[in-house]
Every structure is written in C-alpha cells, then in structure tokens.
Length: 430
Image (cartoon, rainbow, N blue to C red; front, side, top):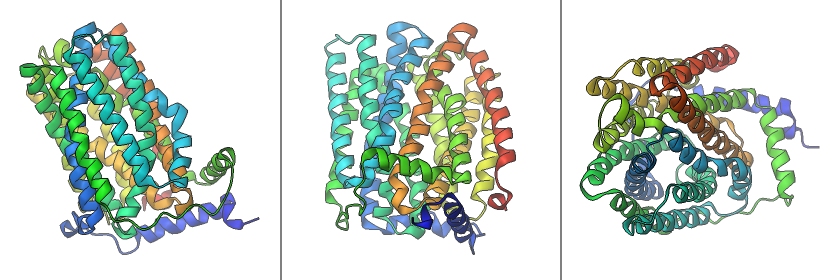
C-alpha cells in the first residue's frame, strides 16, 4: 500500500503546503496584482470570460426580475434558485471525476455551447411571449446541469494556463473579471430590461458565449495525459473521499463555504422582492443592487490579487466569515437606496474575499492527482448549498417578510462562523 494514501501522510503534506505557501510571502505588492496575465493562454481566457460574464450577469439579473414580474412571489424566486442548484447535488462529484479523466478544455467548450443554446431558447420563447414560470424552472435545472460539469473543469483548468506560483493570482483575477461582470452586467440589464424587455437580455447573453468559446479554441496547451490509474468511477470517488477525510483544514474550509452559501450568498435570491417591497424601486433598482454587490466584489478581487502572495490568507478568510454576516444584519435595517448600495459594496467585498481565499487555499493544499475530484466536491458544496439557501430565504421572506429573512439568516451564519473559527488549526492562522 502506498503510504501517501494514508490520512496521516495527507495531513503532513497539507501542512507542508501551508508552510510552503507562507514562506517569504509576507508583504503586500501591487506589482503582483496582474502577474497571471503574463501567460498567453490566461490572457485569452480572461478576455473571453469577461465578455461572456457580462452576458451571464445580464441574464441572471433579468431572469430574477422577470420571474418576480410573472409570479409576484418571493418564494417562486426560491424555486428557480433551487432548480438551478439541484443538479450540483446529483452531478458535481461525478463531474470532478470527469475533469480528472478527460481534457478540461473539451469539457468547458461543450458546457459553454450548451449554455449558449439554452440562452437563445429562453430568448426565443420570451420574444414569442409563450414562456411560463414552470418552464423557467425547467430551464434553470438544465442550466444547472451544464454548470455542474463546467465548474470543476474550470476550477482545475487554472493550472493548465498558468504556473503554480501564479495560480492564486489567477484565481483572484478570475474573480476580478467575474465581478467586473457583476458590477456592470446587472446595471446594463436593469436599463435594457426597462427599455427593451427581458428577451434582449437573454439574447445578448447567448451571443456573449462566443467570446469564451473562441478563446478556448485558440489556446495552445500541453498534450492531455490520461490518468495512470484505471479505476471504476465508484473507486475514484471513494479514493477522493478517503483523501478528503485526511484533510482537516480542507474539511473546515468546505464547511464554512457550505454555511456561507446556505445562509449568506443566497440572500441575492430575494433582490427583486427587496427592490420592490423594501426600497420601493423597479427593475433598474434591482440591477443597481446586483451591481453594487459586484462593485464591492471587484474591489475585493483586486485587493486579493495584490495579496496573492501574502502569508495570512487563512486568517483573512476566517475573520471575513464573521464580518460578512454582520454586514447582512446591518443591511436588513436599511430602506434608503444610497445607503443600501454602500453596504452592498462592503458585502460584495467581504464575500469575495472569503470565497476566493477558500478556493485559493483549497487549490494550494490539494494534491494534483485529486484536484478535479476535490474541486468537484467544492463545486458540490458551493453550488449544491445555494439552492437550499435560495429555498430557505425565499420561504422565510414569504412567511416572515424580506427583512426578517435577512436577519434570521445573518444571525445563524454569524453564530456558525464563530464556532467554525474556533476549530481552525492555530498553525494555519499564524
């Protein structure tokens, strides 16, 4: 038996990676902010994804308001959020194995084409005025399937585009472009929706996928090397869980991400209802709420990119998990649009720091041979918990009101985050 497969050996290697990541990396340097862009493949990815993400956020923002306009129900917003995330429970673990067994670029192209087709179908049905709420739920479920296979391949694809030393910087820059889309896309969506209607938002999203598909096809990558092991899918999955069982720090990170997605990130599900009922706004206000969170996340991503070689990442993440729910509780007491937008900027920055530091720490700690499977489980944790959170916050808003829903979720998240913080190994915080 290979000793490297024992939990103790994995723990030792994990500790070694923490120490390696920390050595000599104690200063903030703005010269590191865009270091991953020196790699041609990553520059292609960055450009293509930026175009695609603008469209994605236009669709996400328009779809939520469209559903609320059709149903006038906060709980139906929860249904859509639940439907888009359920496939993660079913497929994410298997998708991680697929990401370890097959060329990740090919997987990503197939997923992007699938999402493009779905966007055009949604646009066509909306233009034709035949779309029904239940059909949007079905659309969300199909989109969730594509996301389930896309996410672990995308997460583990980073190391094929950049060197290991630039990996965390690339992850941070991924968030920079993601949140540039978050900052700009919803605002454009709000205006486009108000002037032209939702179908145009969906159609523009379909066109935006051309950018990332073209970028993927233009990349020059090393030849794909098939895994040496010839195990069954079940054996591969068991092997991945055995590896994870020996990684206390990885387990704690995933637990924190899970509770954050259930009780924190999911609050965005009720933005359309919040914009109308609490702030007395319209589709444009809904877009501005999404954009404010995106602006904050963009600021947080740029800050993290500069700190990509900073040694106290785990400490930053741990304290961020406490600051984020505190800000949610503060937001629940505000009904003035300008102040709400300001607090959402802070919320966006804090949530970005937590989630991206979690992603970066995982990518640093995990062994290469398990990267796809662990990122598949991370995807299951991230995307799998959000539908549950969407259903919870939508139901709470329906029963107790939007303000109470945010207060309940924020309080639960704060208490759990404080408890998890107590179990983080001291050596990871030092």
